[in-house]
Length: 142
Picture 1 (tube, rainbow, N blue to C red):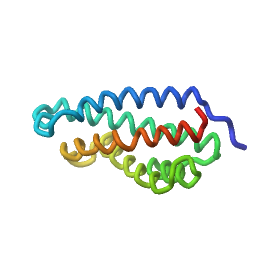
Picture 2 (picture 1 turned 30 degrees about the vertical axis):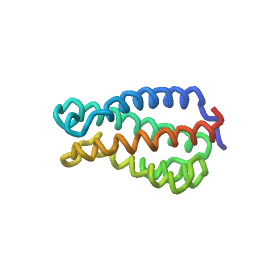
Picture 3 (picture 1 turned 90 degrees about the vertical axis):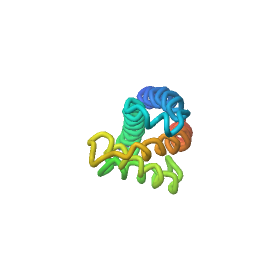
Picture 4 (picture 1 turned 180 degrees about the vertical axis):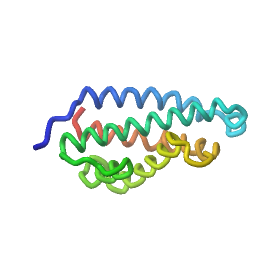
Protein backbone atom coordinates (compact mmCIF):
# COMPACT_ATOMS: atom_id res chain seq x y z
CA UNK A 1 0.00 0.00 0.00
CA UNK A 2 1.47 3.39 -1.01
CA UNK A 3 2.59 5.67 1.78
CA UNK A 4 2.46 9.46 1.80
CA UNK A 5 5.66 11.11 0.70
CA UNK A 6 7.58 13.30 3.11
CA UNK A 7 7.24 16.71 1.49
CA UNK A 8 9.56 18.31 4.06
CA UNK A 9 12.31 15.85 3.16
CA UNK A 10 11.88 16.57 -0.55
CA UNK A 11 11.75 20.34 0.04
CA UNK A 12 14.94 20.17 2.12
CA UNK A 13 16.73 18.21 -0.62
CA UNK A 14 15.54 20.72 -3.24
CA UNK A 15 16.87 23.61 -1.11
CA UNK A 16 20.27 21.90 -0.84
CA UNK A 17 20.29 21.23 -4.59
CA UNK A 18 19.45 24.87 -5.35
CA UNK A 19 22.23 26.08 -3.04
CA UNK A 20 24.74 23.83 -4.79
CA UNK A 21 23.43 24.96 -8.20
CA UNK A 22 24.22 28.58 -7.22
CA UNK A 23 27.77 27.61 -6.30
CA UNK A 24 28.13 25.55 -9.47
CA UNK A 25 26.86 28.48 -11.55
CA UNK A 26 29.62 30.70 -10.14
CA UNK A 27 32.22 28.06 -11.07
CA UNK A 28 30.75 27.66 -14.55
CA UNK A 29 31.40 31.34 -15.26
CA UNK A 30 35.15 30.67 -15.22
CA UNK A 31 36.80 30.24 -18.58
CA UNK A 32 37.96 26.71 -19.34
CA UNK A 33 41.57 27.93 -19.14
CA UNK A 34 41.05 29.44 -15.67
CA UNK A 35 39.06 26.39 -14.53
CA UNK A 36 41.88 24.06 -15.61
CA UNK A 37 44.54 26.26 -13.96
CA UNK A 38 43.64 25.21 -10.39
CA UNK A 39 42.81 21.66 -9.35
CA UNK A 40 40.64 23.11 -6.57
CA UNK A 41 38.10 24.28 -9.16
CA UNK A 42 37.71 20.78 -10.53
CA UNK A 43 37.46 19.31 -7.02
CA UNK A 44 34.71 21.80 -6.14
CA UNK A 45 32.81 21.16 -9.38
CA UNK A 46 33.04 17.40 -8.88
CA UNK A 47 31.76 17.63 -5.32
CA UNK A 48 28.84 19.92 -6.21
CA UNK A 49 27.87 17.63 -9.10
CA UNK A 50 28.11 14.55 -6.89
CA UNK A 51 25.94 16.14 -4.19
CA UNK A 52 23.34 17.44 -6.65
CA UNK A 53 23.02 14.11 -8.44
CA UNK A 54 23.02 12.17 -5.17
CA UNK A 55 20.18 14.29 -3.82
CA UNK A 56 18.13 13.84 -7.00
CA UNK A 57 18.62 10.09 -6.63
CA UNK A 58 17.49 10.35 -2.97
CA UNK A 59 14.33 12.15 -4.13
CA UNK A 60 13.69 9.48 -6.78
CA UNK A 61 14.08 6.63 -4.30
CA UNK A 62 11.88 8.35 -1.71
CA UNK A 63 9.04 9.00 -4.16
CA UNK A 64 9.24 5.56 -5.76
CA UNK A 65 9.49 3.62 -2.50
CA UNK A 66 6.75 5.57 -0.72
CA UNK A 67 4.22 6.34 -3.48
CA UNK A 68 4.85 3.47 -5.87
CA UNK A 69 6.14 0.79 -3.46
CA UNK A 70 8.92 0.22 -5.98
CA UNK A 71 12.62 0.16 -5.19
CA UNK A 72 14.77 0.81 -8.28
CA UNK A 73 17.52 -1.73 -8.96
CA UNK A 74 20.10 1.04 -9.38
CA UNK A 75 20.53 4.80 -9.57
CA UNK A 76 20.17 4.88 -13.38
CA UNK A 77 16.84 3.08 -13.22
CA UNK A 78 15.58 5.43 -10.51
CA UNK A 79 15.39 8.14 -13.20
CA UNK A 80 13.95 5.82 -15.86
CA UNK A 81 11.18 4.64 -13.53
CA UNK A 82 10.45 8.26 -12.56
CA UNK A 83 9.76 8.80 -16.27
CA UNK A 84 7.73 5.64 -16.67
CA UNK A 85 5.59 6.63 -13.67
CA UNK A 86 5.12 10.15 -15.15
CA UNK A 87 6.97 12.12 -12.47
CA UNK A 88 9.31 13.24 -15.26
CA UNK A 89 8.79 13.36 -19.03
CA UNK A 90 10.04 9.98 -20.25
CA UNK A 91 12.63 11.23 -22.77
CA UNK A 92 13.96 13.66 -20.16
CA UNK A 93 14.14 10.87 -17.55
CA UNK A 94 16.45 8.94 -19.88
CA UNK A 95 18.67 12.02 -20.25
CA UNK A 96 18.75 12.47 -16.49
CA UNK A 97 19.56 8.78 -15.97
CA UNK A 98 22.95 9.41 -17.55
CA UNK A 99 23.82 11.65 -14.61
CA UNK A 100 23.77 8.55 -12.39
CA UNK A 101 26.80 7.24 -14.29
CA UNK A 102 28.63 10.52 -13.76
CA UNK A 103 27.80 10.41 -10.06
CA UNK A 104 29.23 6.90 -9.78
CA UNK A 105 32.44 7.89 -11.57
CA UNK A 106 32.84 10.90 -9.28
CA UNK A 107 31.96 9.08 -6.07
CA UNK A 108 34.03 5.98 -6.72
CA UNK A 109 36.79 7.59 -8.75
CA UNK A 110 36.54 5.03 -11.52
CA UNK A 111 39.30 5.75 -14.02
CA UNK A 112 40.85 9.13 -14.59
CA UNK A 113 38.18 11.82 -14.66
CA UNK A 114 38.64 14.22 -17.57
CA UNK A 115 38.50 17.78 -16.17
CA UNK A 116 37.06 19.06 -19.47
CA UNK A 117 34.17 16.57 -19.17
CA UNK A 118 33.47 17.81 -15.64
CA UNK A 119 33.49 21.39 -16.95
CA UNK A 120 30.98 20.39 -19.66
CA UNK A 121 28.88 18.50 -17.09
CA UNK A 122 28.46 21.73 -15.10
CA UNK A 123 26.69 23.37 -18.07
CA UNK A 124 24.45 20.34 -18.62
CA UNK A 125 23.63 20.20 -14.91
CA UNK A 126 22.74 23.90 -14.78
CA UNK A 127 20.35 23.41 -17.71
CA UNK A 128 18.76 20.06 -16.76
CA UNK A 129 18.55 20.06 -12.96
CA UNK A 130 16.17 23.05 -12.73
CA UNK A 131 13.86 21.20 -15.19
CA UNK A 132 14.07 18.10 -12.99
CA UNK A 133 13.19 20.16 -9.90
CA UNK A 134 10.21 21.86 -11.63
CA UNK A 135 8.83 18.45 -12.59
CA UNK A 136 9.26 17.08 -9.06
CA UNK A 137 7.65 20.14 -7.46
CA UNK A 138 4.69 19.85 -9.84
CA UNK A 139 4.28 16.08 -9.62
CA UNK A 140 4.37 15.88 -5.80
CA UNK A 141 2.46 19.12 -5.34
CA UNK A 142 5.02 21.01 -3.24
